[in-house]
Length: 75
Image 1 (tube, helix red, strand yellow):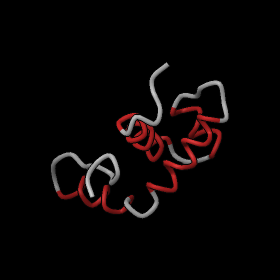
Image 2: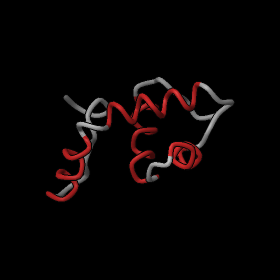
Image 3: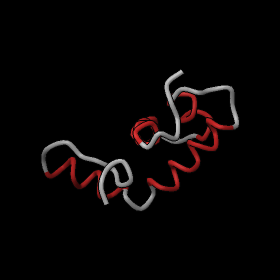
Image 4: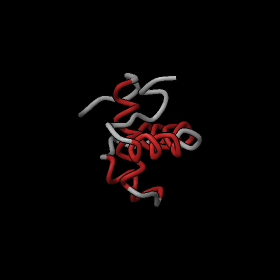
């Protein structure tokens, strides 16, 4: 499975390990992020992270993936 359905990585082993470690939770986080955005008048990644109390470092990539999938768009 490839990005955006699977977390992406840049170059290097550390980046790939980080992406692989998120593979199990990324679909759940994407679903939660999408639900929060749909149930609002629009939220930034930072606002979603704050609202669901998850690190912005986990949420920003999920927002990018959702945008790449065409499920959300920039306002």
